[in-house]
Image 1 (spheres, helix red, strand yellow):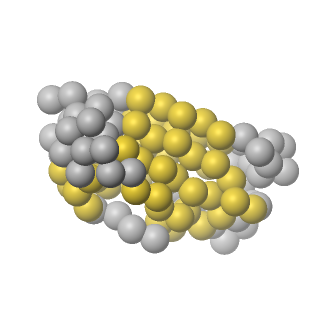
Image 2: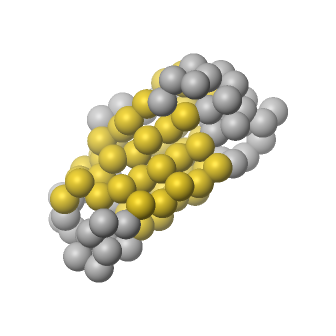
Length: 96
């Protein structure tokens, strides 16, 4: 099923990023796969047209890459940013 999952990620500082998620249909059981980072929320449902922001933090400055998975979606959504020092104002938007 295509749930219209969209992700946008941006740096807040060298070790913190913000992941914004939205969908056009109910996305069930969202799970974040972000090696080297800890998310302030994981395993949740996302209502349509109700964006949700998730904070991501790491123990050290490093590039950010990962996936957003929903159990009822056909595709996972990848996201990535270079390390903060290389592109502090970078923003990436992805749609599945």
